[in-house]
Length: 228
Ligand code: ADP
Ligand code: ADP
Image (cartoon, rainbow, N blue to C red; front, side, top):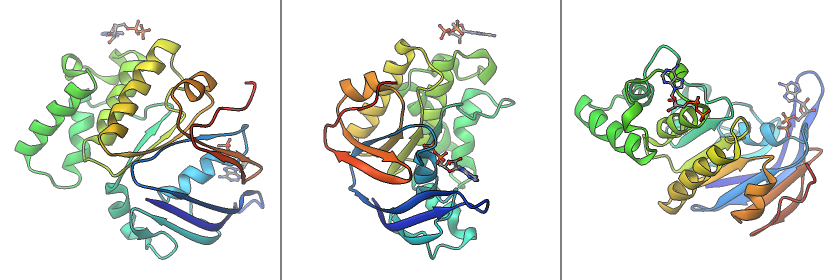
């Protein structure tokens, strides 16, 4: 699903965020990415969906060679990937239904299929009753569930989540984790950056720890390993 070989990321201001990183993630895995602030977690994750380009090395994601992938082909890669952010990034002027439907409209799905599938995923995330609400009318947990519905509506092979519970209280965080677990069980590979030690230590999965741009630990059913 993801293969990185000797990947380096140096930003134009001279900061080297990732140094000689090599890693493989197989289809179906659930991977936590942990580490201190500034360690390179976001840079690592952003390279997976070509939000950032690696400076050198090799990256393959969902069968695409990202070092050779032309910018105009990036939307093809993104069709295979769902992305969830800490701050949800829903479109404020669209309802929950419209936010989710839009992800299917932009790839040219038929109206009938859109209606069927949007209602199905809103049911899956428990938001059928909020379909006509706007994001500002939802709690944080509900907004994140809407964002997850949008991320999975096109049945991605890979779901990338950058601090998905970062703005949520513990109860809503567990709700989000229950959903991600279900999505993973149904076959979607998940990569999740997180600072939530309780979650990592309770729902055990592979843990990749990054410090100073390098993987310093890679452990199946690993623990969080930091005090924060
Ligand atoms: P984390 O997600 O673990 O906090 P980041 O990948 O955001 O780490 O950052 C790793 C390093 O790269 C930090 O030193 C950060 O300041 C730097 N960095 C991140 N994004 C940029 C950018 N767009 N331009 C320059 N430096 C950046
Ligand atoms: P939480 O318990 O996560 O803090 P809130 O108190 O924000 O949730 O919201 C509780 C319920 O009220 C949620 O179902 C939410 O959708 C609804 N709600 C919150 N704000 C509004 C609003 N401005 N208009 C309509 N419904 C709202």
